[in-house]
Amino acid sequence: MSLQVGTIVKLKINCLNNNPGTRGYVFNECGDGCQVIFENGMYDGFGDTPEFNEVHTYLEVIGKSSLPYTFTHVIQLGKDFENGYFSYAFRAGEATTALSVGSEKATQEISPARVRTIFLNLSNDEPPAGHFLRSFAATLIAADGENFYLLLPVAKELIRKYNL
Image (cartoon, rainbow, N blue to C red):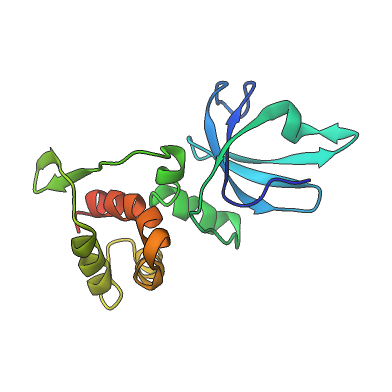
């Protein structure tokens, strides 16, 4: 059985300039296997068949993220990685985010209400990362309850990265 999108894995052995223990996010299910993007932005496919089980050989499942992702093509995957979309999945469980304030760096908690307001304003404006941030803003605003709080660390990281 192939791993599902959102599964968090770590490498058992060296792969794609990644050491054992490097985390990855399953971004695509494909036939008898899956595709994984790693913390360094490299990605690869892993077969999952009785005669050729790379999933078992290379990957160890360490969790499941509810971070949604719909794979369209590798160019978009690269843009999403560069824009920080997968950063929360790689640091699962991190509770606080460094917020950039002017040229100072301060670690502070941003209230969920403030995060929602920032992203509500982005849904109509042209944010620094364009389409990606507008799409994420729409997803965050539509999220409720537990899903909103699961997306909150990603939102805070984007606020920091783009000085929103």
